[in-house]
Image (cartoon, rainbow, N blue to C red; front, side):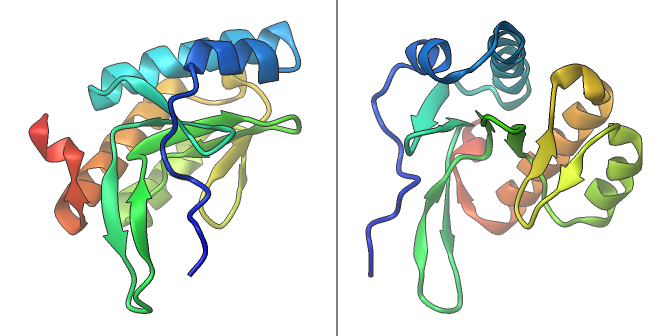
Length: 145
């Protein structure tokens, strides 16, 4: 089995944002997302792979035998849009999407152009729901909170 690309790294998060974010708006939104996700999760930001900023961690194992660790919450300030890794496929999360604002849904993430396009309260509720879901279903560092 190949090496997992989203392993945590020791790269400095602030340095990454300052080098990677392609606009002042993207930098400002990145630092605001760090502030929010750190507050909501109770974990310090940490780099996962080359471009994901994650908070906390949990261990997953699929029926196929594939397993690994992933951040509980996370985002990446990609060029086209932010990728938000905050969604768990629960009924509550699905309902919260109607209040989230302007976004596109991917398989495992939510894409937003800028933070002002979305409802911060709905995002917070979605993050809390995701933390709760992960805590219920996986071996999770969030149990320590």
